[in-house]
Each structure stands twice: as C-alpha cells, then as structure tokens.
Length: 264
Length: 157
Image (cartoon, rainbow over all chains, first blue to last red; front, side, top):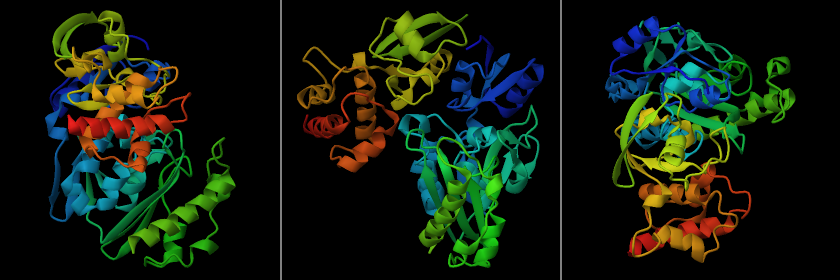
C-alpha cells in the first residue's frame, strides 16, 4: 500500500471539506474493500477520509412507513437490529449473510452501495425495495443510483448518509453464493411494496438492475409460474471462472422463483 | 508518522505508525505480538482475527491508526498464570490443529461466536460462523468439535 494522508472527521460537513481540500481523496467507511484494494495498489488515494467517527451516520429508525439505515451502520448491526428484523426481516437476513462475521463487524451499507461491486448483496435490496439513497447533497432514487460496474451516481465529494426503504408487504432475498468469498454469483431480491412487485438482481450482469422481464412475467403478483418461460438476455450476463453467462441466466430465474416462494 | 495509543491485552501501549501501517503490522512488528498471523492479502483467511472493542475483526483489514484509543485483545491475551484459556485447551484436547498457522484466528473467532451465540453451539452454527477462517490442514472436523467443546467449557467455568 502506498502512503497517504489519513484524515479522521467527526461530521459529514468536515468530511466533504476534507475531500475538497484533498488532491485525490477517497472516503473510507468500513474499509473491507477499500483497504484490500489499496494493499493491491489498485487504488492509491492521496488522502483517506475516515467516516468511522461520524456518529450522525449510524442511526437506524422506522418513521412514516420507511426504514432508514444510516450509511455507517455495519452489516452486523443491521443483521442484529430488532428494528430492522421487525420492519424488513429479509434485509436483516441479507446483511447477516454478507462476507463473514469479522467482515460484517466493519463493513457498512453505505460503503457497500457506494462501492457498487457488481456481486454485492445490498444493491439488489435497494433496487427491489425502491429505496432512496440520501447523500450529503440530495436524494437519489435506487434505480438512478447504480450506473455501472463499480460506478454510481455519486459525485467525488458526495457522501451517502443513509438509505430509506419503504416498508414492503413481503420481501425475500435469495443468493447463489461463491463458497469462498460469499459474494453473490447471482442474487435476487423480490419485494411487494404498495401492491407492486419489484425484482432486484445482483451478480448476474455488470450493474445491479431491476428485473423488468421477470416482473412482467409475474404480472404484479407474487406468482412465479411464468418465470420459466422468460428469455433473459444471455449476452448481457457476466461470464467468469465461477459461472458462465448461460448458467447465470438460469440462476437468475431459479433464485427469483425461490425468492417469490419465500415471500408467500 | 502519527502516534497511536491503545490498550492491548489489558496493557496501555503506544507507538509511531505511518498512515498505511496495518493493525496487524503494528501488533507484530511494533509490539512483537507475533501470535496474530497473516495468511493472505485478500481479507479471506482469518488468520489475523483479533478483537477490537469486543468484536472480531480482521487486523489485516484495519489501519493501526483506526484502532487509536481502542481496546484490543489478541491470542496472547487469553491464557493466564493458571494455564490455557478453555477454548485454547479445547483445541489441544480435540486435535483442532495440525500446523497451527490458522489457530490463533480460529480461537479468536471462536470466542466471538460464543459471545454472540452462547455456550451450547450446534455443528451447523459453528461451521457457518467459521466461514471467515480458512484452515488448509484439518478439514475442519476437529476444529468444529473444539469450538463446541470450548464453548461448553467456558459455560462451566
């Protein structure tokens, strides 16, 4: 890892200011991707601005039909939160199956979605639940947030502050995981919210996305009977040593059916 | 260089570190606590698991400077004058190690499992909870037995 300036801040405003002063700064949340990336010299920021001390980013609450999770809430805290378990149990279970226990004690929801690893779990939930990503500048709807592999709508000096999830009537997440890394080879989150069924897909393509063809086949109901006949665009699927594009396309349908079943 | 101070195994320590110094480097190289191992550079193997403020973390994936002011426990902090910690003893009794490289991380993760799940652990819980610790010798069977036995022994002590 190359040397950098370490900046610890205690507020969002101070973090933004530190970023604006830095030559080539990066925010670090839990660091569970950032630090390995820096160790491998795939990133070499001039300044690392640590959000670990920003207390305002760790709030979890349910208000006006929304579950709001502060960006610096760890996966372990989301998994163990009685409030999350009551409001959206599928989200608590998703968080409890990210990585491993030690990673979950450091990794955060804000870090996960800002990094937007195409195989990360949270993006599927954010999309399927129709969440809103609150940042230091604005509110970004889920479908506009994830723009490409490791790319989001965030600007350089913009920080995710929280994610607000409208409470669903039913929700479930199913992932076919890589047994070594526990990243999703394919993960599908299905949610019924305000009478509408949405599908969020991660791991399958370069960018977490809404499964519109799958939603159409379900006709707005938690009904998986039409999923088998959906023709997913195989050419858009990721293909690597873990799974071919054809296999991923197949897995998307299998995980969707399992998630629908788990919703019922 | 910055000065960091923290409590390690009950003792106040401080040292000079670069921003990029990993917590595991600080423990091993500054403090000479070489029981915490580094087995990979991808945050997957778990040989470097320690406790920071009572929670398991991979000390290769945290900066020393981020642990400033923290309460740290490493494998060296477990045994006392009376002998091994019950979890260490259980690894010995159950042949829960062969080469021993992964063992410090396994033991520290095991204690975290007990903290969160109690003293009666079924096999599937232990296997799932040990997902972040890789062993290349044992095939895990005796490690799982050791964690279950150690958890039970901790409840009885």
